[in-house]
Image 1 (cartoon, rainbow, N blue to C red):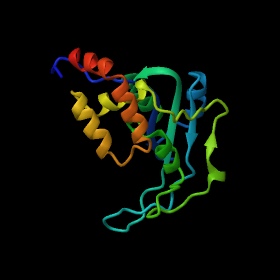
Image 2: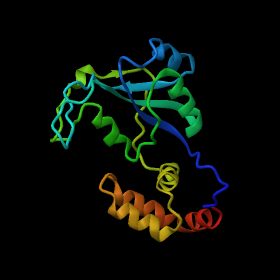
Image 3: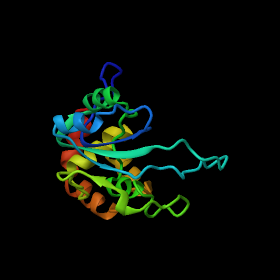
Image 4: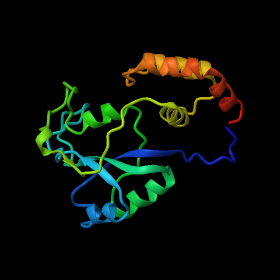
Length: 182
């Protein structure tokens, strides 16, 4: 990748963390005014640091859903304006959703699904498509089909590896051209 190219992938979903004392009081209204939906975790007040066992500062996790693909810089500017952390593109949306309550994370405190706050138009799109794979390529700065294949095979966060590999192999020409034109 050329040093003159700015890394600014587009995505519909972004993850963030925020702390009750540092978030804008009107953050919900700001997201609503921009027609942005979200899934919000319960307050994570029992999380502990892995290395010390010390209780972490209470915080929320949020998945923000834009109804069309937006640039990382756009999400970053919005998040900064309301006190969220820098946005992250999810590698596995289903796993990110489960992390809101720590469902499936046996080493973490389990929060109740009843305490999730989900806006009415939030859609959890967990099916794999070429756009998801391209986002993965951008996020991981992958440059070849072989690098992509090995990365998918070795990534324990990808639940549908065979589906990913089927898409990659059936669209090999597309990905070859994609990588040739990076």
